[in-house]
Length: 146
Image 1 (tube, rainbow, N blue to C red):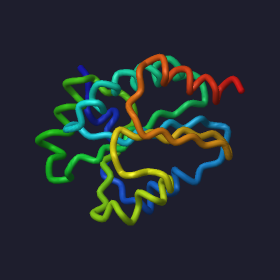
Image 2: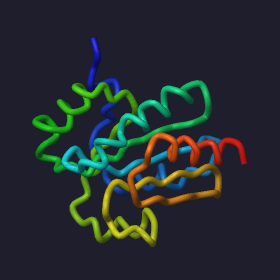
Image 3: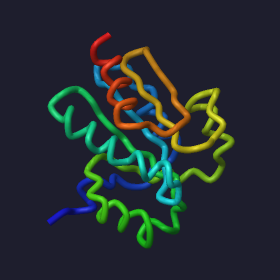
Image 4: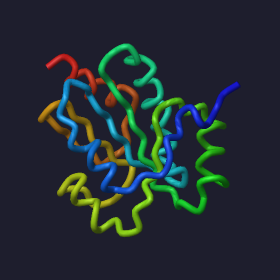
């Protein structure tokens, strides 16, 4: 039986999330900002799940940061994760003032979603659009095979 708890890691404030953003090790991190109410986000989500499955034995970590409303955690987010077998790490960002944290993720981010930040050590790439499967895998491979 699939368990929502297997991938939902809880609510996270930006201060805690910023520690993840400041990681500079050999792990390739792919952080996608999304929401269940965002159609392009939902359409690209399976690509991130597939990516994590493909690279599970590599130093690759896919993290989904949900921007759903915290009050809809039990009524919307958790059922969505279970129904769609989302088996990658998911946090619900519980930060009431997006204007305070969006520029700290990336100065060019307008705040629209989906948005993805990919980095390894000091190399970073920010993309504010939805990905096709091929685009996501090609970008990932650029980081893994420079």
